[in-house]
Image (tube, rainbow, N blue to C red; front, side, top):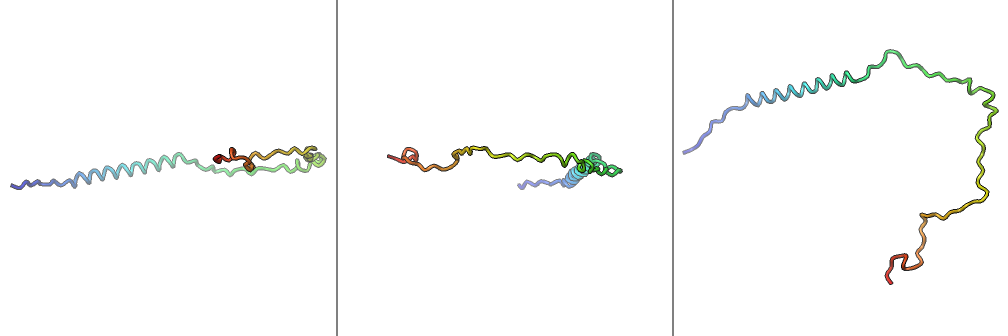
Length: 100
């Protein structure tokens, strides 16, 4: 005896599931687009004012009389330090890690 199964067509269920998924995708895109549009700042209709420069302050005669930064003289005694990062040649085998 052969066992036979009649396969039911699930085409209607598959179409319904795809339709629901498609509608959910469209709703997400639509509401996401509305949210982005509402949260973006609206440019103002008035142009930004141009900053004005006060040139009169640069033409003040007291500015010309002012002394520039004084020159910093180097220290009288040059203090030399040893470079802590300079390589020092090893003089003993204990320093180099060699074997006796």
